[in-house]
Length: 295
Image (cartoon, rainbow, N blue to C red):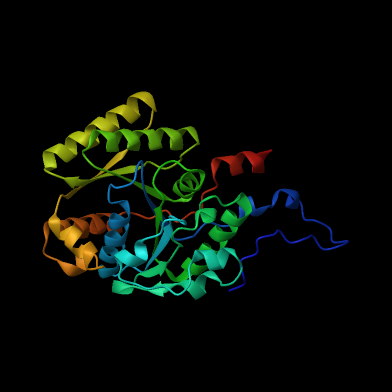
């Protein structure tokens, strides 16, 4: 794999540009051609990364070839949740020191992790060109995968919304706490305003009961339909299970550490439903790209 280039190549001197080439900028670079699921949340502390890690391992156990991409570039923790110790991370790729396939770490159930850095705030604000270059390299890396699972940063940062809108599917993680689903609604409001083209799915984590989780999902769906003219899918809920925290402290997923626990069974059920869904691997252009390309 070629090194990730952070500057656009200069046109060849005297070469005739093909029709429309003037608009073929980094904005047209391919997204991952496989099914891509972004996992995000309106606020931190709702278990988003734990969901992403467990869902990746659960899908892997079902036979899916999964790439888990740590899209929280500056506050990464998926390596800890999977019990891995990467030598290199995305910071090395973006500085041109390594290629994406050189930093990949093999995890449980065949999951391949693309680790990010921790504490490097510079990585949280990538310019458009480096972000598009990252998409291109991820597209190449995922050629032999069935699924790319992207764990974004929490909130509605430019990078998070970019990952969310580039994915073919979106999972918004919330909890029954009013501040949590209020922030989830706020995130959806931002994404819809930016031209979100997918129907987001809402997953209620740490639910004390199925009834309470259903109430949260129903309320959030009503709000988005009424005020955002957008439908959302309910992906169900994950129980408030002490086995999850125990697994985190052991640097393992609950799917591995306590496979018969309520949380592990819920993760496996969710993975089964997602894996059974028809896939739509077609790359998607972001809204600002569609405007630029049609200008």
